[in-house]
Image (cartoon, rainbow, N blue to C red; front, side, top):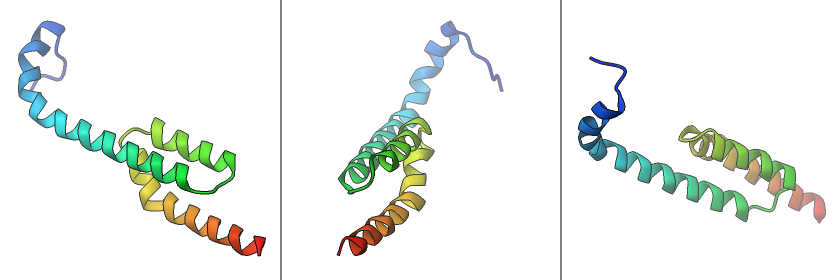
Length: 87
């Protein structure tokens, strides 16, 4: 198996890869959009939002997964504690 392809060879391989790449790209964009919307709806301090925004956007496919696996619950708990302290 060849690991390095030139631009001329990529034209021959690309049609074979598109059925795999298109669903992955769609899933990535949907996860990114949902994670960003979820983050922006939370009432959090500005710096917390900025840090999670950087993680979601810059860590590519894994960023939204990390946010939904760990960050969303952690931030919900932080918001709940903040609401209790305001009462």
